[in-house]
Length: 164
Image (cartoon, helix red, strand yellow):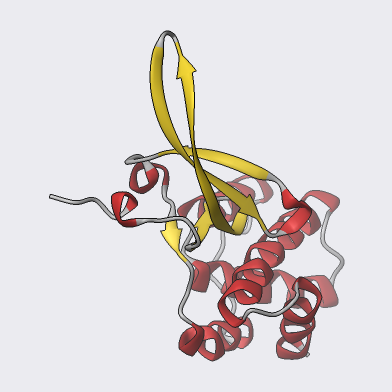
């Protein structure tokens, strides 16, 4: 049986959980503890950071293909959907927000961005929660940028328009 990660190839646009979208730019071999291992080299959109993911382990760590271009309007519409139901207490709410990011469901992450953006306009978010909103927004913008083959700035502008 072929796993989803085995089907990845150089040139694919993918999402690395908690880091955002990028492209597989190559495969490299590394010798670790005397054993040669193969890795996908993924260049992330923001900052040109590169991460290595063991070939065959992508599914285990949550690596997935980028959202299809035709679903981007649906993704942007999530920004204006009703607020997510989050715990009222700061600590459980923060844990839930972190969990949403870690799960990697980009549609739920977009909804979190909308929820936090509306809360920020009503009453300024704490610095920690504002960073959470920015991290989530970054994940959505990198995915849109790759899905539509546009700049990160243009993707961020589309998010801004969808939020206003």
